[in-house]
Amino acid sequence: MAAEKTSIELDKTEFALIVGEEDGEMSVRVVGGAEIADDVEEMPAPAEIVLALAMRLLRDPDFHDEVIDWYYEHQDEMDDED
Image (tube, rainbow, N blue to C red; front, side, top):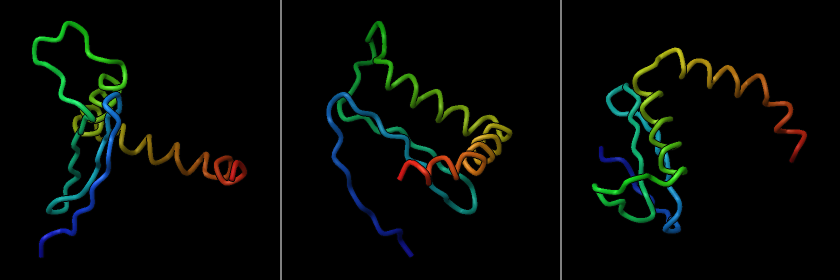
């Protein structure tokens, strides 16, 4: 069965990290609100951050666990902010 799709609109200065699951494996995509030229001298900071997170999630299994642990350790703090 094909996955149901949804769409979001990004500002030209925004970049999204999309994490999913495909065949039991984590999938990661980066989507930008605008195309970045291949010959750009310096990527915008938001794009670099999202790309770094995507690469680390895919290449460092311990990082995935650390992120999940951090999330659960700080869950009460986040609930208090609501």
